[in-house]
Length: 255
Length: 228
Ligand SMILES: Nc1ncnc2c1ncn2[C@@H]1O[C@H](COP(=O)(O)OP(=O)(O)O)[C@@H](O)[C@H]1O
Ligand SMILES: [Mg+2]
Image (cartoon, rainbow over all chains, first blue to last red; front, side, top):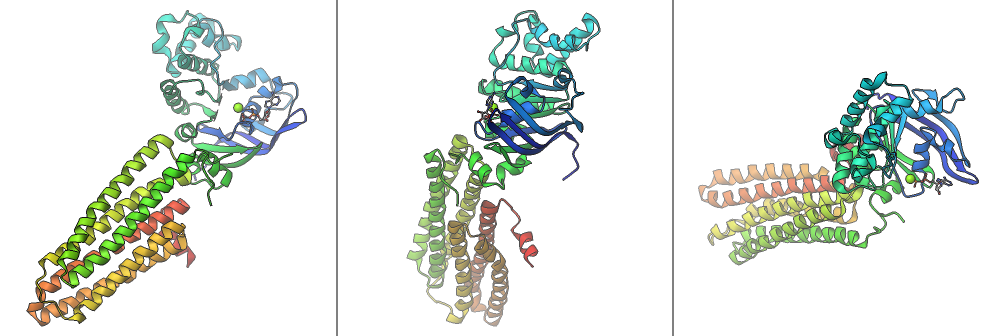
């Protein structure tokens, strides 16, 4: 296998919510400019691991993270790290599209504005348009940029959230079941988008759909009861997995 | 051993495929055996029954095809399931071809006049046929038992069929040169021998497919070399 650049890495990552341990010594490398899919039965710790990658777990009081998590080989839990800046570099898209109750333009422009990425209105406009284009949404909304984002369809809202994540020029985009609230057509559009985005971004996606993981990712990691049980290139994972638990889960024999 | 699917109908779908492949295998075996008997005994009735059975085999292949298409559409199989489904499709194709080869041999029985050739001419062909049938039977057993060792042995033994065919070819050629009256009949036997050799090739495919279904690797050959 050819040498791939490692964008993020987790070493011995353990996470507890109060007394309850949710992740146990997870070691996982995230290759640059690839899509990594996290799969496994509900409650196995996929979202928990995902939230470690941009320290979203910090927002949960009882959550305690240990281990070593790196972005470009830099410890993201180091005390010198600016969490706001980290979350701009490692953006996130959630399961339910959650646009702000503001206009489409403001939804996308808000991030660049507060991060000081745009000098003046013209530059901001350029960022907004470009982000919407990259998210494959611009053509559909160009005549109503100042109408509320919440007025879009579910699929459009999710692409708006992706545009919002892209607008702050992240390096990594985390997606937690981004299509679970979408119909098949909207899902196909988001998947198509993910495939295009991987040219410029490193993507980590949590998904319940085996077929989606097989379609969009290059690497797949299988979690079970808080442990990482297997990680391999996606083609191998879905045709010839090594671990019995993976085998059972992806063939629908689990539980 | 794999456990059961959460969705029971998925297991039923896969079991259906396995039973259809076994059924095709049994039919193909019987067709080939009867076709050679029909040819060497000039039994036209037996030949006819083989030709008729080919329709059954064709229908079974169609049934497997249709079932695979539906299963993929309904259940999007993954991993071992996916390999089993693709494997079943490949095996059905090879088994159907084996049936065709049997049918073509059986048809030759219609052209044979009643003057049967000397027994010694038939011995080599009977042996080649037996070995091919043995191979087919072992491959089908390996399929049912998911036995890759057995599949590999079958795969290895194909060389034996090839050399049996080559020496039989020479033998028949010699008979033809000895006495031109043997030519017509020997040509039928040569044709039959060639078909047995080709059946061996299809059986080799079956062995490769079984290996793939069980291990996920298409490379039965290189693994043999590694064993050396
Ligand atoms: N905010 C939280 N507070 C307490 N426990 C949590 C919290 N979030 C997740 N957990 C627990 O951690 C485990 C892993 O959850 P999660 O990472 O959401 O799994 P997944 O995304 O794979 O479904 C579960 O047992 C869940 O109940
Ligand atoms: Mg989750």
